[in-house]
Length: 372
Image: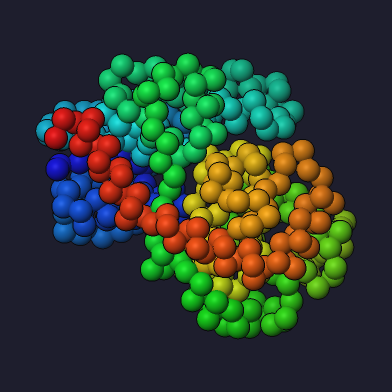
C-alpha cells in the first residue's frame, strides 16, 4: 500500500508528536507499506520504504508559515497517486486525519487567558487562521475518517463541530516497549550522579514541551507541601524563566532541575520514582504511556486522554481538574509510597499497548477507507 504521511516535522529530538510520527511511519514500512513523508523539516535519515518529500515554506516563524505548508503540500500531493493520504497534523486535503494536536478551540476556552489574550484574542491572526483550518478539517467532506487519540477528544469533536460519531475512530497511542520498559531502571545511578541527585532521594518527573498546557506550575507549587528531600526533574523545552521567581519565593531552588531537551529520555524515566502530569488539556500525551511502560508510578489529570488507560489506585492515580497544589502533593505521597505496586501494574498495562499493534490497527483502517 502506498501511503502519504503529512506533518511539518518528523524528528526524534523534539516533542512526543514528532517522535511518534516517526515510529508510526517506520512500523507502516515494516508492515509492507511504501511510505512517503511530506514535511518542511526532517530529523531522520532516508530509509528503505520511507521516502522524504520536503515541502517548501517560509524560513521564519509566523502563522503564515503553517498556511504555506498546507498550500504547498496540496500542490505536491497532486503530482503523485497514493492509496491513502494521511494527515498527522492540521491539514484538510486528506483521506484520513489523525488528530494528534490539541483541539485548538477547546484549548482557547479551557485555559486561563492572559491580558493580551483578553484584548487581542478575537483578532489574533494566528488564532483566527488555526480556528478556520480546524473547522475546515472537521467539516470536510473529503476526509473519510478521523482518528481521535481518546474518548475525551472524540466527545470534544462532537461537541464543538458536530462530527458524526461514525466518522470518528478512537485509537489509543502505542509505545515502543523495546525502548521503554522496566529495564531502564539500570540508568538510575548514572543519571542521578550526572545531576547530583542522591541515590535515595524521591524524584518526581515532569515531561513536556508546553509548560503552560501541561500545568508545570501546579507541580512546582506542590513541592512546597512535600518533604524537603523530594526533587522535581523537568524534561523538555519551555520558558523556564517564567518560573524562576516562583521557585525563589517558595524556597525550592535546589529542588527543581530543568534539563531542557534530551535525546535518550528513557534514561530519565529510569532515574525517577513518580511521573506527574496534571495537564489542563491533553488529547493523549505519549510521555504518560512511556512512563507506564518503564514501570513508573504515574499521576495524570483527568483532562488528559491517557488517563483512560489508567485504573485509578491500581496502575496510577487520576487527578481531578480542580485539585489544589496541596491535593496534588497528597497524591504524590500516595503514589510514591505505592510506587512498586502502581509501577508493576502500569508496566503490565502498557505492555499491551505497543506501537506495532497500533500500526496494525491503523493500517487496517487505511485499507478500509481506501477500498484496498
